[in-house]
Amino acid sequence: MEDFEKILVLDNEFEAELMEEVLMDKQIPYGIIIREDSALGGIVDLEEGWGYLEAPARCREEIMKIYQEIQDTSTDPGEEEA
Image 1: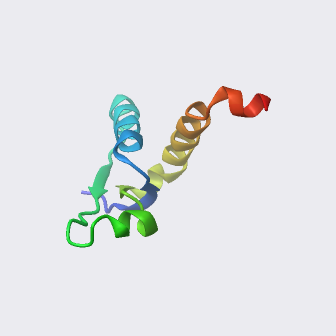
Image 2: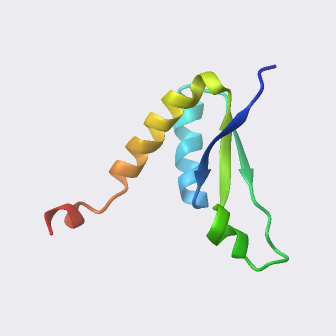
C-alpha cells in the first residue's frame, strides 16, 4: 500500500463531497480526514479548516488541478462582472 500525505485543506463538507465525487470518478486514491472539534466549539475549524484530503504524492498535481477547477466554477459569475 502506498503512503498517503496531506495534499490540501478542505473548508467544509460541501467542498469535500465535490472532491470525493471527482476523485472517485477518476479512480484516484484518497482519504478525507475530518477534524473533530466538539470540545472547543468549532474554533479549530476556523484556524485549520474543516478537514483535509490525503493521497499518494504522485497524485498531488492532478488533485490540485481538480481542486482549482472546483474553486473556479464555484465562484459567483456576478462577482467577475462587478
